[in-house]
Length: 259
Image (cartoon, rainbow, N blue to C red):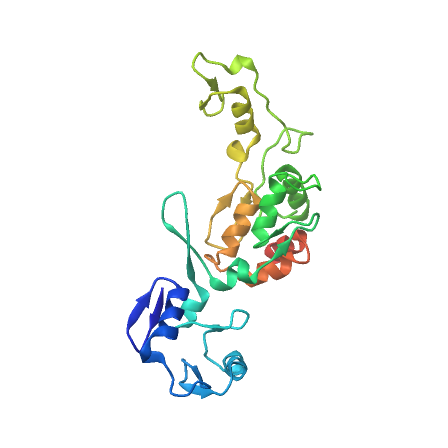
Protein backbone atom coordinates (compact mmCIF):
# COMPACT_ATOMS: atom_id res chain seq x y z
CA UNK A 1 0.00 0.00 0.00
CA UNK A 2 1.09 3.58 -0.69
CA UNK A 3 0.86 6.34 1.93
CA UNK A 4 0.44 10.07 1.35
CA UNK A 5 2.20 11.70 4.27
CA UNK A 6 0.73 15.23 4.02
CA UNK A 7 -2.84 13.89 3.77
CA UNK A 8 -2.28 10.83 5.99
CA UNK A 9 -4.14 8.64 3.49
CA UNK A 10 -3.38 5.09 2.34
CA UNK A 11 -3.89 3.82 -1.22
CA UNK A 12 -4.17 0.18 -2.31
CA UNK A 13 -2.20 0.75 -5.54
CA UNK A 14 0.58 3.02 -6.71
CA UNK A 15 -1.64 4.22 -9.60
CA UNK A 16 -4.30 5.26 -7.10
CA UNK A 17 -1.66 7.15 -5.15
CA UNK A 18 -0.47 8.92 -8.32
CA UNK A 19 -4.03 9.92 -9.24
CA UNK A 20 -4.42 11.42 -5.78
CA UNK A 21 -1.15 13.36 -6.11
CA UNK A 22 -2.06 14.63 -9.59
CA UNK A 23 -5.69 15.54 -8.89
CA UNK A 24 -5.81 16.66 -5.27
CA UNK A 25 -5.77 20.44 -4.74
CA UNK A 26 -3.60 19.86 -1.69
CA UNK A 27 -0.76 18.77 -3.95
CA UNK A 28 -0.99 21.40 -6.66
CA UNK A 29 2.23 23.46 -6.79
CA UNK A 30 2.09 27.21 -7.20
CA UNK A 31 4.70 26.88 -9.90
CA UNK A 32 4.08 24.43 -12.74
CA UNK A 33 7.81 24.05 -13.28
CA UNK A 34 8.54 22.76 -9.76
CA UNK A 35 9.45 19.09 -9.35
CA UNK A 36 9.62 18.20 -5.67
CA UNK A 37 11.65 15.51 -3.96
CA UNK A 38 9.29 14.10 -1.34
CA UNK A 39 12.17 12.76 0.72
CA UNK A 40 14.09 15.97 1.35
CA UNK A 41 11.45 18.61 0.32
CA UNK A 42 13.67 20.11 -2.37
CA UNK A 43 12.21 21.43 -5.63
CA UNK A 44 13.75 21.20 -9.10
CA UNK A 45 13.06 22.99 -12.37
CA UNK A 46 12.75 19.86 -14.52
CA UNK A 47 11.82 16.21 -14.13
CA UNK A 48 15.30 15.27 -15.38
CA UNK A 49 16.91 17.30 -12.62
CA UNK A 50 14.70 15.62 -10.03
CA UNK A 51 15.57 12.18 -11.41
CA UNK A 52 19.30 12.95 -11.29
CA UNK A 53 18.98 14.14 -7.72
CA UNK A 54 17.02 11.10 -6.53
CA UNK A 55 19.37 8.72 -8.36
CA UNK A 56 22.48 10.06 -6.66
CA UNK A 57 21.20 11.20 -3.26
CA UNK A 58 21.95 9.01 -0.28
CA UNK A 59 19.17 7.49 1.83
CA UNK A 60 16.57 8.00 -0.90
CA UNK A 61 14.37 4.89 -1.41
CA UNK A 62 14.29 5.47 -5.17
CA UNK A 63 14.03 2.86 -7.92
CA UNK A 64 16.08 4.29 -10.78
CA UNK A 65 14.71 2.12 -13.66
CA UNK A 66 11.10 2.83 -12.62
CA UNK A 67 11.74 6.47 -11.67
CA UNK A 68 9.66 5.76 -8.60
CA UNK A 69 10.14 7.03 -5.05
CA UNK A 70 9.03 4.78 -2.19
CA UNK A 71 7.96 5.81 1.29
CA UNK A 72 10.79 3.81 2.85
CA UNK A 73 13.61 1.43 1.98
CA UNK A 74 11.40 -1.40 3.22
CA UNK A 75 8.65 -0.44 0.76
CA UNK A 76 11.18 -0.24 -2.04
CA UNK A 77 12.41 -3.73 -1.30
CA UNK A 78 9.06 -5.38 -0.69
CA UNK A 79 5.76 -5.27 -2.57
CA UNK A 80 2.88 -7.66 -2.27
CA UNK A 81 1.88 -9.62 -5.35
CA UNK A 82 -1.79 -10.47 -5.77
CA UNK A 83 -0.97 -14.11 -6.41
CA UNK A 84 -1.38 -16.45 -3.45
CA UNK A 85 0.12 -19.72 -2.38
CA UNK A 86 -1.95 -22.88 -2.07
CA UNK A 87 -2.39 -22.16 1.65
CA UNK A 88 -3.94 -18.78 0.74
CA UNK A 89 -1.23 -16.75 2.46
CA UNK A 90 0.08 -13.81 0.37
CA UNK A 91 3.19 -14.43 -1.67
CA UNK A 92 5.66 -11.62 -1.03
CA UNK A 93 8.41 -10.69 -3.41
CA UNK A 94 10.85 -7.82 -3.32
CA UNK A 95 10.29 -5.06 -5.85
CA UNK A 96 13.87 -5.36 -7.04
CA UNK A 97 13.30 -9.10 -7.48
CA UNK A 98 10.25 -8.69 -9.71
CA UNK A 99 10.17 -9.36 -13.45
CA UNK A 100 10.48 -5.59 -13.97
CA UNK A 101 14.14 -5.86 -12.98
CA UNK A 102 14.97 -9.44 -13.90
CA UNK A 103 15.18 -11.28 -17.21
CA UNK A 104 16.99 -14.59 -17.06
CA UNK A 105 17.51 -16.37 -20.40
CA UNK A 106 17.64 -20.13 -20.74
CA UNK A 107 21.21 -21.02 -21.79
CA UNK A 108 19.93 -23.50 -24.38
CA UNK A 109 16.84 -21.91 -25.97
CA UNK A 110 15.28 -18.48 -26.46
CA UNK A 111 12.95 -18.70 -23.45
CA UNK A 112 13.37 -16.06 -20.72
CA UNK A 113 12.28 -16.17 -17.11
CA UNK A 114 12.02 -13.82 -14.16
CA UNK A 115 14.83 -15.47 -12.20
CA UNK A 116 17.30 -18.35 -12.03
CA UNK A 117 14.86 -20.75 -10.39
CA UNK A 118 12.45 -20.19 -13.29
CA UNK A 119 15.10 -21.37 -15.75
CA UNK A 120 15.78 -24.48 -13.67
CA UNK A 121 12.07 -25.33 -13.39
CA UNK A 122 11.87 -25.02 -17.19
CA UNK A 123 14.78 -27.46 -17.60
CA UNK A 124 13.62 -29.90 -14.91
CA UNK A 125 10.20 -30.15 -16.55
CA UNK A 126 11.81 -31.28 -19.82
CA UNK A 127 10.32 -28.35 -21.75
CA UNK A 128 13.64 -27.19 -23.19
CA UNK A 129 14.80 -28.24 -26.65
CA UNK A 130 18.15 -29.17 -25.09
CA UNK A 131 16.63 -32.41 -23.76
CA UNK A 132 17.51 -31.60 -20.13
CA UNK A 133 15.21 -32.90 -17.44
CA UNK A 134 15.45 -33.25 -13.68
CA UNK A 135 17.36 -36.55 -13.93
CA UNK A 136 20.10 -35.07 -16.12
CA UNK A 137 20.32 -32.03 -13.87
CA UNK A 138 20.62 -34.22 -10.77
CA UNK A 139 23.41 -36.22 -12.41
CA UNK A 140 25.29 -33.07 -13.40
CA UNK A 141 25.01 -31.51 -9.94
CA UNK A 142 26.14 -34.74 -8.22
CA UNK A 143 29.31 -34.73 -10.34
CA UNK A 144 29.89 -31.08 -9.49
CA UNK A 145 29.21 -31.52 -5.77
CA UNK A 146 31.68 -34.31 -5.03
CA UNK A 147 31.83 -33.51 -1.31
CA UNK A 148 28.03 -33.51 -0.89
CA UNK A 149 27.78 -29.89 0.21
CA UNK A 150 24.35 -29.28 -1.34
CA UNK A 151 23.47 -32.88 -2.22
CA UNK A 152 22.76 -35.75 0.14
CA UNK A 153 24.44 -39.16 -0.28
CA UNK A 154 21.77 -41.52 -1.59
CA UNK A 155 21.63 -45.30 -2.03
CA UNK A 156 20.79 -46.08 -5.64
CA UNK A 157 20.59 -49.22 -7.75
CA UNK A 158 23.94 -49.77 -9.51
CA UNK A 159 23.95 -48.62 -13.11
CA UNK A 160 20.70 -46.65 -12.96
CA UNK A 161 21.91 -43.33 -11.53
CA UNK A 162 18.43 -42.45 -10.31
CA UNK A 163 16.88 -42.81 -13.79
CA UNK A 164 14.96 -46.05 -13.19
CA UNK A 165 11.53 -45.52 -14.77
CA UNK A 166 8.51 -47.22 -13.27
CA UNK A 167 5.58 -47.80 -15.63
CA UNK A 168 2.19 -49.00 -14.44
CA UNK A 169 0.10 -51.46 -16.44
CA UNK A 170 -3.54 -52.44 -16.42
CA UNK A 171 -2.82 -54.64 -13.43
CA UNK A 172 -2.82 -51.45 -11.31
CA UNK A 173 -6.64 -51.41 -11.55
CA UNK A 174 -8.06 -52.26 -8.11
CA UNK A 175 -11.73 -52.26 -9.01
CA UNK A 176 -12.38 -48.55 -8.46
CA UNK A 177 -9.30 -46.85 -9.91
CA UNK A 178 -5.67 -47.22 -10.97
CA UNK A 179 -3.72 -47.42 -7.71
CA UNK A 180 -0.15 -46.27 -7.09
CA UNK A 181 1.59 -49.10 -5.27
CA UNK A 182 3.89 -46.61 -3.52
CA UNK A 183 1.32 -44.32 -1.92
CA UNK A 184 -2.01 -46.04 -2.66
CA UNK A 185 -3.41 -42.97 -4.41
CA UNK A 186 -6.04 -43.77 -7.03
CA UNK A 187 -6.30 -42.27 -10.52
CA UNK A 188 -9.15 -42.34 -13.01
CA UNK A 189 -6.88 -43.32 -15.91
CA UNK A 190 -3.70 -45.29 -16.48
CA UNK A 191 -2.13 -42.21 -18.07
CA UNK A 192 -2.86 -40.25 -14.91
CA UNK A 193 -1.15 -42.88 -12.78
CA UNK A 194 1.90 -43.00 -15.07
CA UNK A 195 2.17 -39.20 -15.07
CA UNK A 196 2.17 -39.38 -11.27
CA UNK A 197 4.94 -42.01 -11.32
CA UNK A 198 7.05 -39.91 -13.71
CA UNK A 199 6.70 -36.81 -11.53
CA UNK A 200 9.09 -35.98 -8.66
CA UNK A 201 6.36 -36.89 -6.15
CA UNK A 202 8.20 -40.02 -4.97
CA UNK A 203 11.74 -38.71 -5.53
CA UNK A 204 14.14 -38.62 -2.60
CA UNK A 205 15.12 -35.28 -1.09
CA UNK A 206 18.40 -35.03 -2.94
CA UNK A 207 19.27 -31.41 -2.13
CA UNK A 208 19.95 -29.62 1.13
CA UNK A 209 20.70 -26.05 2.10
CA UNK A 210 24.39 -25.81 3.03
CA UNK A 211 23.80 -22.98 5.49
CA UNK A 212 24.68 -24.14 8.99
CA UNK A 213 21.58 -24.50 11.12
CA UNK A 214 19.12 -24.29 8.23
CA UNK A 215 18.36 -27.99 7.69
CA UNK A 216 16.02 -27.55 4.69
CA UNK A 217 15.91 -30.46 2.20
CA UNK A 218 14.46 -30.47 -1.32
CA UNK A 219 13.64 -32.99 -4.04
CA UNK A 220 14.57 -30.61 -6.85
CA UNK A 221 17.39 -28.17 -7.48
CA UNK A 222 14.79 -25.53 -8.28
CA UNK A 223 13.38 -25.90 -4.76
CA UNK A 224 16.80 -25.24 -3.24
CA UNK A 225 17.42 -22.27 -5.55
CA UNK A 226 14.02 -20.76 -4.71
CA UNK A 227 14.89 -21.12 -1.03
CA UNK A 228 18.21 -19.33 -1.55
CA UNK A 229 16.57 -16.61 -3.69
CA UNK A 230 14.13 -15.89 -0.84
CA UNK A 231 17.14 -14.90 1.33
CA UNK A 232 15.39 -16.59 4.28
CA UNK A 233 18.59 -18.24 5.52
CA UNK A 234 21.08 -15.62 4.31
CA UNK A 235 23.21 -18.01 2.25
CA UNK A 236 23.27 -15.66 -0.76
CA UNK A 237 21.53 -12.46 -1.78
CA UNK A 238 18.95 -12.65 -4.56
CA UNK A 239 21.12 -10.44 -6.80
CA UNK A 240 24.13 -12.70 -6.26
CA UNK A 241 22.16 -15.74 -7.39
CA UNK A 242 21.05 -13.99 -10.59
CA UNK A 243 24.53 -12.64 -11.41
CA UNK A 244 26.11 -16.06 -10.95
CA UNK A 245 23.36 -17.77 -12.97
CA UNK A 246 23.93 -15.47 -15.95
CA UNK A 247 27.28 -17.19 -16.36
CA UNK A 248 25.67 -20.63 -16.25
CA UNK A 249 23.73 -22.77 -13.80
CA UNK A 250 26.88 -24.70 -12.90
CA UNK A 251 28.59 -21.40 -12.03
CA UNK A 252 25.75 -20.47 -9.66
CA UNK A 253 25.75 -23.95 -8.06
CA UNK A 254 29.53 -23.77 -7.70
CA UNK A 255 29.14 -20.52 -5.80
CA UNK A 256 26.63 -22.17 -3.44
CA UNK A 257 28.99 -25.10 -2.88
CA UNK A 258 32.07 -23.00 -2.12
CA UNK A 259 30.15 -20.49 -0.04
